[in-house]
Length: 361
Ligand SMILES: *Cc1c(COP(=O)(O)O)cnc(C)c1O
Image (cartoon, rainbow, N blue to C red):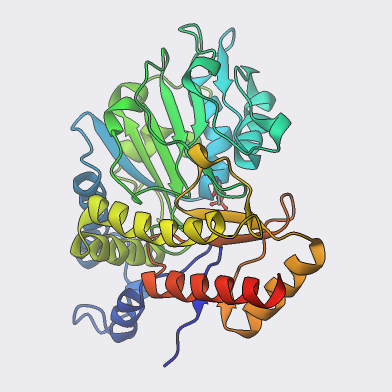
């Protein structure tokens, strides 16, 4: 068996052990004589998986008792309209801090549904940094403030959340959830599509403070309401059972590998390998992100010319590295090094980058 050095931005690498474990259970899960995909979502065998996944998220992230964990469909992108539908009443304003394309997309949906503002934006730099605390312009008047904790496309990341946010804080953590411990109590809501750090596509994790659940207007359609899903333990309608089963396995794997703190150490080590190559390349590799805003999940960089970018990507592909093309809005290269990407893959990429520089400088 050979596994690729997978640097895909999402869907992304999954732990080999998780895939192998799923493989052994594919036609007979838990002595049911059925695949987990064939079970009723009302069966005890499935419900155990479902409840274990929710319990693991709570314990891995130290989620306080006054929060619910929901497992929804529609990806992080469906959260973009759901949030204003539920939490942006007429006459109020929601504040979207702009740090990349995903924040822009979240804002675009909110604009369709209500009044918004953006008190801080890094757009003028093509999103090379996270605005610092003094630039945020927060206000108690805002219905909520929305941030993107890790900017998958540009490779920047909020380094901490230790400030007075003044209004309920809602974060899109699709590309860094469970990559490190986070102070959940600072947030009113956290959401994340699973396909970067937590599993396959098809399930979206929402961590929401219970006091938000009864705030939705009567007119919000049933399936678009958070309280519908909270009241039914995310079993109001058929959940994406296979995706949740895989999510549960990945959460188990995170538990076995030191939990959120274990992931932080693992991810720091990986990211530092690659950033060190960039920093020691005498400008051959240029990071897109400003140093103090660097992402430990998506390492974005450019070579000295478009031709060298192309050559690098071509030779990397031939050498067995997958998914290193930068997003079309930034160009250049991007190594996505989510939880499941191994230190060995990052070590191999580091060596490849050094050799490529030696051969092409
Ligand atoms: C990938 C990504 C999304 C989009 O997620 P979908 O599940 O495809 O809707 C949203 N936000 C961020 C930060 C992402 O990285």
